[in-house]
Amino acid sequence: MSEIKTFSMKTDGDKRLSEHFTVREFACHDGSDTVKIDMQLIRQLETIRAHFGGKPIHINSAYRTPEHNAKVGGSKTSYHMRGMAADIVVQGVDSRTVAQYAESLGINGIGWYEAKKFTHLDNRSRRVRWKDSGSNVVKTFGSPSPSPTAKYTNSPLVGYIRLVPKHSGQRTHCIDRITPHCVVGQVTAARLGDIFSGTRAVSSNYGIALDGTVGLYVEEKNRSWCSSSNANDQRAITIECASDPKPPYAFKTVVYDTLVKLCTDICKRNGKKKLLWFGDKAKALNYSPKSDEMVLTVHRWFCNKSCPGDWMYARMGDLAQKVTAALAGTSGTSPAPAPVTKKCPYAEPKTALRYGDKGNGVCWVQWHLNQAAKAGLKIDGSFGPLTKTAVLNFQKKRKLAQDGIVGSKTRAALKKAVK
Ligand SMILES: [Zn+2]
Ligand SMILES: [Zn+2]
Image (cartoon, rainbow, N blue to C red; front, side):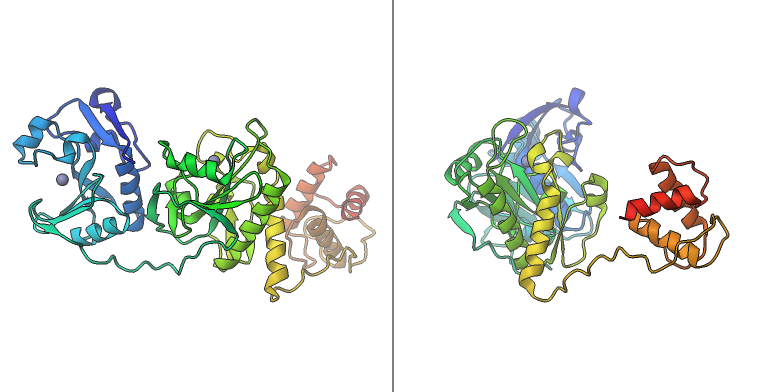
């Protein structure tokens, strides 16, 4: 699964390989222009960085030219010469803990340099561990410190299983997002497995095939390679849905219905009672979900793609609503939503009201602004600055004269808006 790329220090030195790593950090220390870098290693380093709470990783040595490798006494077959290895120090974390975590990720070549205080990692094809020197082979560095996350399970709705190696090992963030994608093709569950077994570095936790079959490709406990965002995929369950090959990449009805069921099941097993859709990238990504909330995110927020396609994007709110309703219906504990009362308990004022006024007439205005414009005002009968702002906003929206005064025209518009 290695993916080795060649860069030039002259032209690519400052180029970002990922969110936190640049080409320069992986260059040979002898000043050579050519730099070879395994992109799989970069993804693993991001995972390691995230696992240790975002502490910076220092790269002691990565790519080495054969000449330089010989000079520093590297092994004749060193993976540093292929750009597949890095000797790293995670700031404030001891080198054995790093080696243990790397082991849990399934990284094949791991060397723990206790005295020199660094950890060597490489993506060779066979599992080898050593301590201090390549000739001192060891079996294991011990089990990694237990993850704070709960038990992970997989969906009982799965009708096809093909676990692929393309993932970053156990996720470093608890599950609190779901990201539906469009495949850009009406594929079977097996075909999706073939795609994930091919040369491209892509995978998803689940897939929904054109006939509604749910495929499992990367277990829920693991971080899939799906949304062009390490931060998102560490915490999201990713679902690739069979879609038309052309815009708007529509799903078949059975696929969409299955997506609702699968999302409901994922929420239930992970202790969530609500699935939220914000329809706004900044809002969604900055939101810290409560322990019983799951947030929907979309691939298009993380790269220049239309995924999940305009067809699905237009239904994200519907998906959230259906799943949340299903969760409320089966949990038996959530109370039914309170019926919306549209009858105002306050008498309509007979005169114009403005900033500084007080009384039940102001309550009538505040109640109507809350109903008509979701103003969120406290109904206290006091015409203060917040009430005035809400009046101005309402007048602007209704194309009324913006004077902040509630006269007969504004009152009529408020009544009409609440009906
Ligand atoms: Zn090394
Ligand atoms: Zn996508």
